[in-house]
Length: 493
Image (cartoon, rainbow, N blue to C red; front, side, top):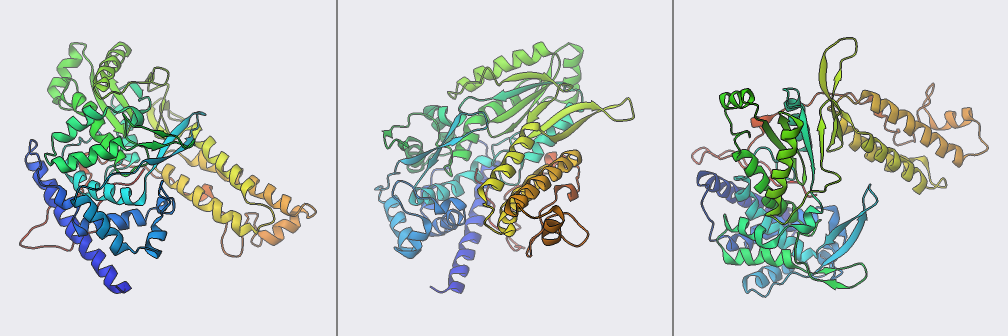
């Protein structure tokens, strides 16, 4: 098959998958109690497997092998994609498919602890991706607006904007939630019970359970059984964690003072001294904003602890905090705090980069300047620094970040100049400037690129979208079909 034929086959497969996803999402939304009984044929459909392959193939993790030692490139060069997918489809249909253990990789966290990352084989990743293409549109119809993590069309900025909006409207007390080892402790029976509410196909349920139960090959080469949790790093893990944690979303939504209460009901509760509250959740990071007192917030924290225990989860006692908006909180890398506006007596809620996020990016700049040796050209260093700085600034651009960008700009400039001085220890400052800077300037640049300057990044205000977040799979008019957009899929963690 030549390149043009392959591109046409992939495009046709994407259109077919998107059309079926749209139908699944519509049917699930029309009937909240519907259970889908014939999904396995979609999981093994050649179009779904082909799209799943290209999702896996296009991810950076495709270069990392699982326990079988195979990567996407080795499959393309050896067995071939067509034969690989045919073999996978056959094994799925004749029930001989069994997930292989995931390869454990311990990743250091900022706190000094380690996070377990499970690296599945390419074969298992493709099967998981196909399964996700089928299940995600169904469960997206059930997920509530308060959930933002790892969902299509939603981002962390939406969650931060909602916290800022609510705290600006006298939701002064915040329960900062931290679930202890969320991905490692989710109860498999409780999770499967929630999956069964929507999925009646026993073959799909068996496949989901098999992926949850797949063993773990530790870094010490010892095989361990997996009796709880979903391996962090797998393609299905974000979707399954959202299914599990939606129990918290639903509990808050159905509570008397939750988002389901009308304006009059909330006013009555305030007059009676009862709290109103809203939940904002991004994957396992969440906060509950409370219109009430600190005692109300503490009671709600205990209530949430009982709800999470039904899924085998528990709150971290040391990290679950109750704070006032005047003291501020850190959420998704942002510092959210009510402060007095300079030159006035008015107070507003501001969002700006948290100190922890700034420390992380400066540490990364320092590490990159050490990793790139002074025997290499300046362009090699800029090629590593610029993407990191550009991505960090793009994330923190919609906020009060100008002062932070200015500080980061000076820090990066000083680090790169120290690197250049180490490269040319006998050269004077003027000689280095003449060689590596534009005429009349002092900002380092190579022949191909200039050092990214965070100070030149303009800040914006991210507007709270609320109910305006677009539907992932909009219905089409069957009598007047429009060209389909690209396949919608939530980002991989």
